[in-house]
Image (cartoon, rainbow, N blue to C red; front, top):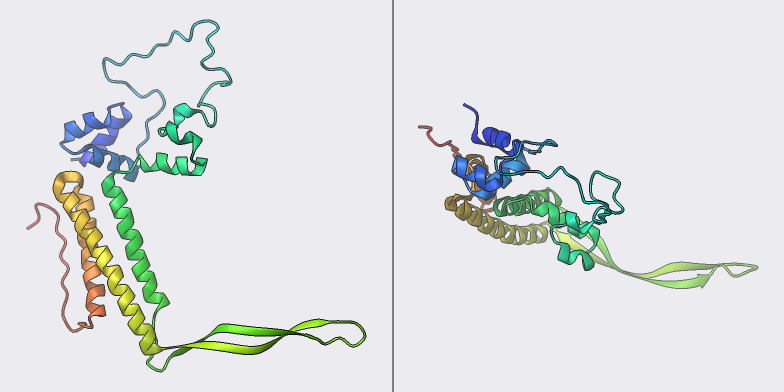
Length: 247
């Protein structure tokens, strides 16, 4: 039997609205919007409209000026009828308006997942940047440098900058590692808070099974990172992800 999102896509292509699809499959409207975004649903031009929806094909009355400046097809560029947030047209740049329109296709659950993945990616990236190879490692960086200008020319002036003073900053391995652990601990706390909020939204019926499996997998990966930070590498970790109905 086909998954609900596959059947729902056919209904969407046939012209059903979000609410009609949500009622038909017993899910929230946000879930339907999430399916549309994730599986790239698109309605074909001239899609079937449900009964009761009629299209006026008689054309505009003679001398009608509504379509002036439009030779046909899509609305002219910057036409306000294509902007959901038309009120902001006067104040926001086009790039911002485009982002706002894209955001409207994403559910609150999708937005929360985006934030989780961005935070998680930053944590993993920090592992590479702050990696300390051994306890004797030291980084030397120039903190301040002073110059004086001297004339080194013979016949005609030729000015050159000469370094007269340099101040260095040294970072030892233990200091870098301690800084990393502190920053990583804060980042992990933020990530765990986001995951908890995501799980709360899942329990409220905003998530499908695939989204619930994704967060379960991520929680397992986060627990491994926490174990390494706490130096509990000797403790075994078992990650089990089960679909509904599995025994």
